[in-house]
Image 1: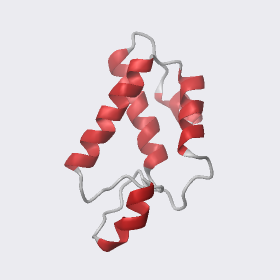
Image 2: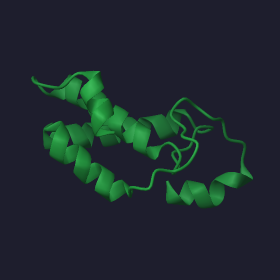
Image 3: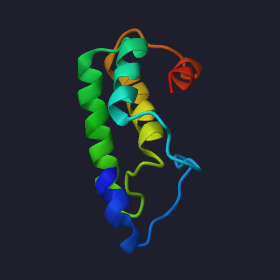
Image 4: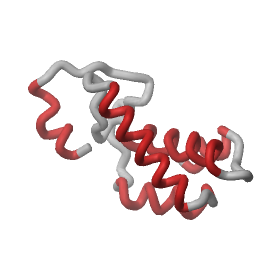
Length: 99
């Protein structure tokens, strides 16, 4: 996210529904710790979420992961991974509250 913030201005970027108007004040590390604490998903969900984000960045080069969308992409990828990997998971509204 940080490298795309620094170097992203040189190429044309699209804006998606994941983009916020301003970057959130919480750091990515603190945000991941918050998700880990409240989502109660297995550690494998975070690995799968990383794979989802990696595939997203490879298949959507005009939508780079940056500080305006990384938090929303993280919570979405963890939520989808939890629903795919875990037997027990929360509804979408709960994940929205975590985010």
